[in-house]
Image 1: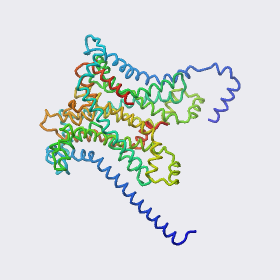
Image 2: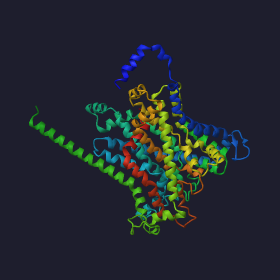
Image 3: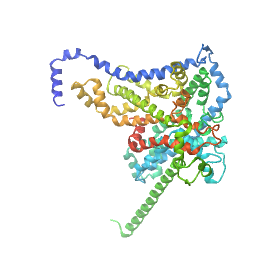
Image 4: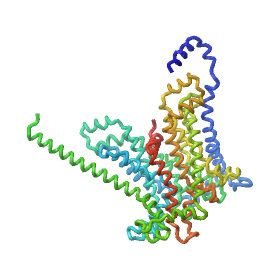
Length: 296
Length: 294
């Protein structure tokens, strides 16, 4: 490394004009080559299909034969179909019911673990995070076994026969519970990281000024975490609208889809797909996108 | 200088502070421990119940197995011709997807992080913006294309849609930005080719973030459900996550074979838990990098 430097400077000083003209082709081309695989696959696998699906949503197409132009008919049909509104209602329910508890719990735990009250942070962190890495499908089945009416573990322990999963009134809440259970670990880690970016001097200054723990939390920590909170809520909202695994695996039997009473919006996309109503299926996708935009 | 009385008072209040604090510490720890016990309980039950035979599960769902048995695990291999194949499918799909995805994302991240070229920042911003679009929007189109290509019920069909990850691009670039450019420049002056810069310098230096992203991506593909459900309907090719719920089918037996199902869940989750325990630092720091902006 030491030899390289003097060589470079002497070169630059000695022949500045020649150096300027000698731009290697490789230099300008290199970055483009590096991004090509990614960009190409991105365009082919995402942009292209998304655009195509947008166009498709205006047609009726069965996968073979011709596509008939329908204008906005697909959208009209979906928006007037009561099942769609049921599913939308379900999706919004799943989202709103879980997000407050989830965020509050995850944040509180992050504050707790970060505080000086806890010393074995590195033991707690992975344990709290652990539920998040379990596949939603697997844990959905486990919850089915826990909440089963006749043979469920919980009913067995309590001596009751509560139809957790068969009565849809209860079942919704089991889905919400599953969402919270699964999500706490993830947001806990994120909040924890966010908390560590807060300058400890600010907190110390507050303590010196006589602020109690609670006051510090309310007036110092929370405002500083605002951006993280906003980020968290938006990301969670977006993924909440895409919810699919949990309601279906929890309630349906045999890999079928959940009854529309419980299903999220994405179910309609899949049912349409299976019925080869591709135009309609595409339209559902784009409606979902619009919803996501509106919410964010 | 404090009088004896004053120092006695201050001693007492500092002592009270200490005991208050001790109580707080104990309370906090107890709270967390209780939370962890409750949170890990479902996983514990999953594990426990997998060691019961299918018939015992019906009579004794909630408590310790009366008879510890590996029957349910054996049943996994006998069930409808054996689910062994499906685990292998999941492994093949997840691994190949991860290798390619990490490779593509790392190359692109390198370009975005260490090079300047026309339209770089605009392009990156656009890519970020697409993260708002739900991936499921491409499902109908990809299905049509794949069926015309004959890719339904194939490995390619399962793997290909998972290859681009803007999240990965973002995460890796974030990390690469903090790698000192001097390192690269020095090698450049020494005459390294661009590929060498990437492969021999950047990649080894970024291995923490590459590892973290690899794990996260692997997990995502391993656990995926909607796309595999849509693109496959033949049991041979389906990943384990699609097959597992089928086992609760009421047509086959009157009651679901919970023991076997739990065994299946354990087998489907165990590899991940092992990998997680081995790499937990990288894993969780990866989550953080993806979220906390710079």
